[in-house]
Image (cartoon, rainbow, N blue to C red; front, top):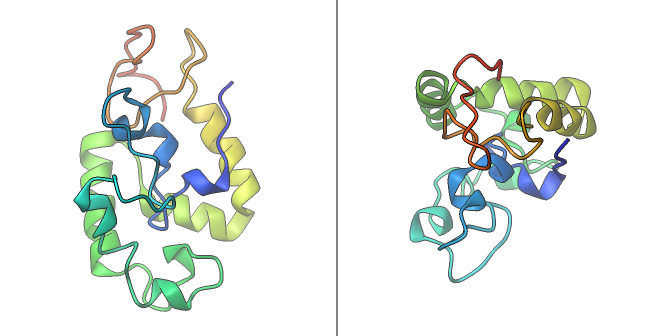
Length: 139
């Protein structure tokens, strides 16, 4: 089973460890929480990561923000539910209710390919390692 750590969970609730940009070999992204000058500009200028309200939270997660869920998180959540069968709002609520360690354990179970044991990308319907069809796999 794959494992993730807190540094891989973006402020918005996205598990960067399952992102196609993080998993690819060429032009690899290091995740939203890692500051690097070579990151794509979209990650550096991210509205969520640079939100003034987020900076006021102790946890550095949007789920602890006074305006959660804001318009931006709601829009991201809707897009990811439709396109990628995942919910940032659900993720953030789980982190709030059960803690980051429980969420990381949950993510490890749901983001491990049942066929080969490698990371399942949130952005693909097939395993990047073994090409296993994940269409009916409960994410």
